Image (cartoon, rainbow, N blue to C red; front, side, top):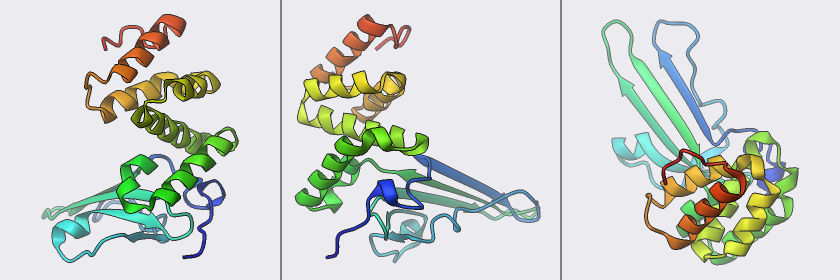
Length: 191
């Protein structure tokens, strides 16, 4: 398999937000779809059922980034409605769809190039690294990451708590306590 382009160099994935949403209602102007921006994203599994068509994982053909795609359609007499949502997955969320070598290559690249990411991509890269470090139990790497990106710390901690399901993960609890104590960034968070 040929080496894929980097997400940092991908014309599509480098410009998408972590979540994209579209809503359209037949007969009304101003609605839109995600079809234009998802043209180079392909399903990674067979779309052999209506459920699979409406809820599946896509992958960028250029850089290999994974996305969760959900759509719903409702037929209404006064104008049918369609909603679409595209959510970029962190590499650890798609780890079972990559080889171990590919996963480690992506994480290394994120570590090396995090500071050069544009605003939309930077949050994804830092969040992905934080999820990886948490899964690995690497508190030192996590602290270095948060130190380099203090403006993202509150959002990242919120994402990590959601990802871990508000579990009693000791590393996450320690990091949250430290973030509250050192910067007061999560004051009033309650967790």
